Amino acid sequence: MMGHENHTFSNDFILLGLFTSSQASLVFFSFIFTIFVLTVTENTVMILIIRRELRLHTPMYFLLSHLSLMDILHISNIVPKMVTDFLSGSKTISFAACGFQIFLSLTLLGGECLLLAAMSYDRYVAICHPLRYPILMNDYVSVLMAAGAWFIGIINSIVHTAYALHFPFCGSRVIDHFCEVPAMLVLSCVDTTHYERGIYISGIIFLLIPFSLIFASYVQILLTVLQMKSSKPWKKSFSTCFFHMIVVIMYYGPFIFTYMRPKKYHTPGQDKFLAIFYTILTPSFNPVIYSFRNKDVLKALKNMLKSNFVQKKQ
Image (cartoon, rainbow, N blue to C red; front, side, top):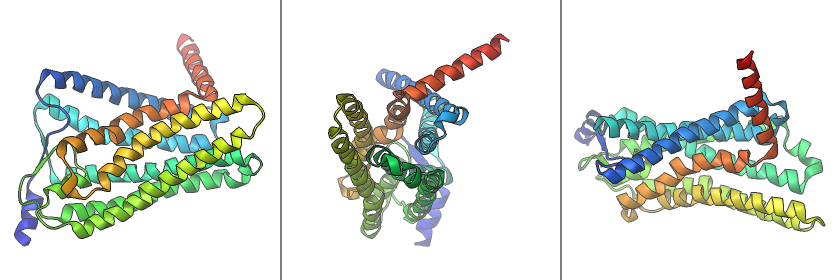
């Protein structure tokens, strides 16, 4: 056993990544890199707008700013390494770097699951109980929700990262896309059934319960809006809930399918395809769906751009 542990700590892993050397991969590389730049830009602008505009200093936008920060960190944890490997031709990653990638990825994935549930609760209270909103969703509650999402995500990540990396890897050390728990379990040469039960429990806490709460809150929102006499708020709320649920399903669906299946059912190509949704695509859609479709955000963006233009002109 000691020999296995020494072997694990002294050898690098091989990351195949999303790209190969074919011409088609060059097009895919350009696509992913463009999404990365757009995602970082969109979410950075979103954070700056929320910090700058006093009208956006509300619990909803406070939670959105944390979602943007998580999305920046999440995609930056994955894509730059892939881009560097593709351009340099090197595909190795050290044991420590792989462990950090797993830790940060799990922290952000878990934290974002809880944060999305908190955001749906905010919308539920705002629409279904507007008179009680200042009490149920004050600044203290929103700070507690954001801090709780980060803290619980970090604790969960520490536990799973430590467990996933302590298993011996005595066969192939080739990881098909990037370092994450399911990929590490596939490489392990010991029985991980007991640990997989722990992942399943975490999946219920971080995936199934938050997703169920989000779905229930949006159903309740739609039922409340349907009772209103005017059709205008109904159309607006339906459009908002529809797009929110599309993004939520794109995020939770592949995440649930990847992390809550036994490792014997995992295939490299399938895991790679699913990972693109919750690590790359969803962070690029979040600011558009949750923020830039909002009139207050667009107005604040115009004011910020106009202010910067005036300052440069002076």
